[in-house]
Image: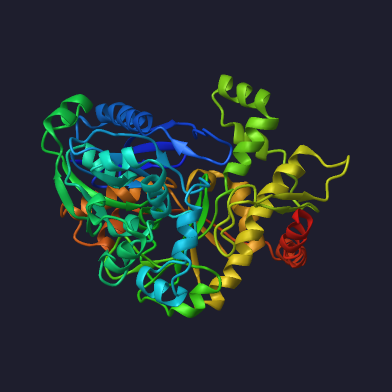
Amino acid sequence: MSLLGIDVGTTGCKVLAIRVDGTVLGMAQREYDIVRPRPDWAELDSRHVWEQVQDCIREVVPFTQPDPVTALAVSSMGEAMTPVSRDRVILGNCLMGFDARGSEATTTLASLDPLLFFERSGNVVANSYGGCKLIWRRDHQPELFEQTDRFFGWADLVAYLLGGEPVMEYSLANRTLFLDLRQRDWSDETLAFIGMPREKLPRVVPSGTITGTISRAAADNLGLPRDVQIVLGAHDQCANATGSGVIRPGMAAYGLGTYITIAPVYDAIPPAAPMIEPRLNVEHHALPGLYISFYYNLTGGALLKWFRDTFARAERAEAEAAGRDVYDLLLADMPADPTNLMVLPHFAPTGPPYFQDDVTGLIAGLTLNTSRGEFIKGLLEGVTYYFRDGLDRLAQAGITIDEFRMTGGGARSDQWLQIKADILGKPLTRPRVTEATALGAAMLAGLGTGVYASAADAIQTLVQIDRVFEPDAQRHALYEERFSRYGQLYPFMEQLRQ
């Protein structure tokens, strides 16, 4: 007996098949590109993404023949929503969270009392949320909006296209700004204020809910058994926390992907006022009785990908020809000691505390003696300083972290994790399975269908520790001195941009 965990991310999708004892049977992944009709617009071709997801499933299914799949669940990025017809046909692309469209809606929502809005939604208004894009589509694409039966987040969309009910899970619903956090339903007050018809949104239900059985057409198309149960997954950050064993207060998932996110978990909704100043959010965890916040950077791992695609094309081709990971080649050039570079990682719209769409990054300290390895390490240091600052802001809001679980593609790099441990001054724990988001989705499939008696039982079975990275005291002291200068970069850059 096996489970499928499907993860739909910003630049690629993954499908993981595991036996219920935790043995990995197979994994497949595909990349896709952001579509930019204009420089400040960002979309995904939803039909193409759905094709890529199906291709991944088809690739993995043969590995499950001795242990047929009994259930699946899907995790996904949070904000991107796709228009779908009543007969389950994708009608258009999804707009990404870092798409500039939706600013008018942001201005309208920002006119609400911020304290009351946070109490209701668990969020501070920002244009990155999916609801702002829906309002833009209502106002600027009225024909498409009218034709749309419902708008789905990706985890819920894949479940629906496979044959599940038209529903949306709490954490993904939270990413619209339209959810009432405490009532666990769409907020009538917010929908009325913004003029968003409730019927354009799926019914809201908790993660782990069985939403149906795979349709016969989908099962035959993908090679899956016809009795596979579809379990509602979660926002990828929540699934990532689940798949890495982050299920108690004081723990945090630290995901190193296209985006980088610290996601601490706690068991009670915190007071609104101290959360608003650093512009933190509150969201339902994938597991009942728990909540989660996100401190994230949208530049994240994409900064390393940018370096690869811009400055290391030859190395990428060489690595592919040799069957090696190009990042292993690039990171091997990094020096052991901290660099003198200072990088403000605002190369894409920022998360908390700024939530700026019109941003510019900064790389300072370059000389003719700067090596490629120093340049790469400086980029990774700058992204980590962003989160060193975030730990202070989280603590001021009453959220403390005593254990990090490292996940995502970047967590496979020993060098990168050691840089982070040295800068943060805290030990970082890496599970054996670093693709924790897809694993978390598979875990939710097992929990929803009763394969595992509890989350603790599932984690004991599926989550094992690979290594703990301890900070080097001497390097940490050097980084602390450099971090004191990092805080000057943002004000300087804002002044320079005026």
